[in-house]
Image (cartoon, rainbow, N blue to C red; front, side, top):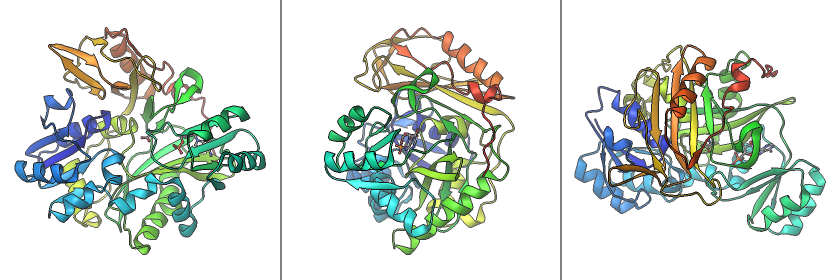
Length: 421
Ligand code: AMP
Ligand code: GLY
């Protein structure tokens, strides 16, 4: 098959790498892609959110499958445009992508499906937010209703900070605070059948020790050595399958990747958020361990044949991804910083460096975004994978980039207790 991947982040580089490993993928294209994907695919300077341009490109390159990476093109209806042109597409319709595009819509679906989530109030004014946060008490959780690239949420015990955030985030959702470790579980679905990937944990805060503002994600690891037995089965039974069924009943079947972000609280598992696409950076770690052929699986999902695909196969290794972000991120990120060092355009058995916000300036690789690189390492356990990842980072010369130094540290040291299900 000929596959066109839409997007230009670390997630899309990871998707392209996994598709490249699938022998049934004979040609691989990205739009727009990045300097990393250019090493394994043909990049095209086409806006991923422009449905007409994407369809024209898909026809020109003879794509038999289009894989949509980011949420923005999905919410804009690009998957609908591709399917209307008669080309198989992995990614939900605009209607179904609202499960990420509107937090309030996601709450309505969860209520209809009986899926456990945080109690919440929808607010259109700061006064309503003030009343709601006073009702729930601290820590306060205020979320912008619409898309915000991972930056629309504040979790704080500072009431003034919560209200200030709300002022720029209306309409907003105020939620009860959820304690307990978080899990990201991705499920591939054709709208009826759903197939789980291996669960991962993501690090949302910018700084070590979960300090600093929320970001799109600063690192991730998989598998979860502390996970309770039956975790994936419980999430599929209580969250993913009921949601897939509820979306079908509404007449907006969800096909593509349903991302369940969960908290394993002292009162049981709760959905923190749904996303309508692969998570970034969890995907970089998760797909690095996938032994099944990704192209064949995504194609089966896109064409309603997922029931024919058996369980996915995984390497026994552990994987860690550490994100290198440009100074200033998640605020205004410094652009143009030079990046030099080994493995920037290739990988070995243990380490891959995935590009996100990078660009070429002459022969130099430079920073051109918030999250710039994701260093993925695979090893027999998380501790060894951490060593490999940080060793590869220390070998880079990238003075304008920073990373967290504690990705997967507590899990590798056995410091995360196993929550009850
Ligand atoms: P979201 O975009 O909804 O995933 O929120 C981003 C991050 O904020 C999550 O990954 C959590 O770390 C945190 N968060 C969101 N909602 C809650 C909540 N109700 N209680 C505690 N933390 C939350
Ligand atoms: N890593 C969180 C996300 O992709 O939304």
